[in-house]
Length: 121
Image (cartoon, rainbow, N blue to C red; front, side, top):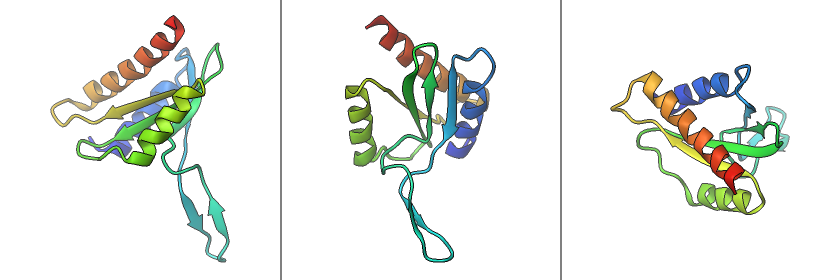
């Protein structure tokens, strides 16, 4: 399973009815349009999937990583900042030893664990 596949499966699963979350894909950095316009996207380091946890309305970001993809310093800093400000930041990683279903289940378990830990505090 590749990182992009994990993102796509998480996007569907986190948006399923009754999931308690609503997320969308977010690109970070900047792009230049064909006509030369410079467009800023999300800040570097922001998570791949961004959204809300209900009923609390908490901001959540999920950073998806491939089996060998490095968690970059700007991503680490972003996650720490987001947590300080009351949001949730969860890093999930593809494990080549797991099936697609096992990878998605492990990622969902990590998201649910982060939500439950925040609720307990």
